[in-house]
Image (tube, rainbow, N blue to C red; front, side, top):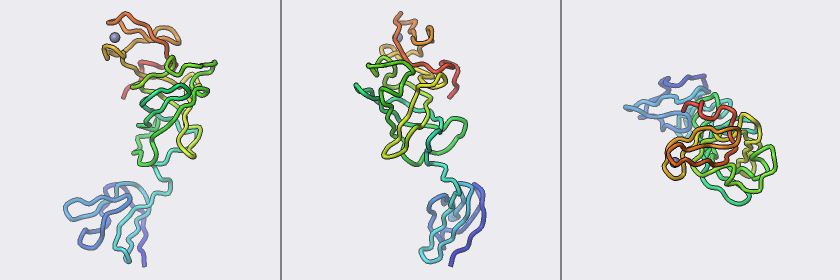
Length: 187
Ligand SMILES: [Zn+2]
């Protein structure tokens, strides 16, 4: 026997004496609250309170635009950790480890990942695959690095033309696949 009704984040849905908080709920001071919009399920067999979202907010899909931090670069790909979905502040509970193949980084031909992306770069990218793992592309103009720190001195680098960044302290230019709004993205 299950009770079902629509709830909103912060709605009190049960008490801890009777139910265990589970997916989409959290416990505080003996009470259980919804942490997301969805349908409340009070499972009276297992004594679990959960809120089921019609569209799970934490699962990335193809064509989602995301922000990610480059974790590493190798000869044929970069790896990145997805930290946010563009335009939607959503918790990412699903898979956030992603790869960007060398052929999906820039519109032109690239044979050296490290000339386009570097560890620690913030990028905007589009999800092009989710199975068996997350795959991203930064090919389009609006995709690519949006914020980067100098590898040597860690100060923020400035855009220099379409494909270069410049560190004023080190007086050093480095190549990158830049997003068209590099430097204007607020985190
Ligand atoms: Zn520097």
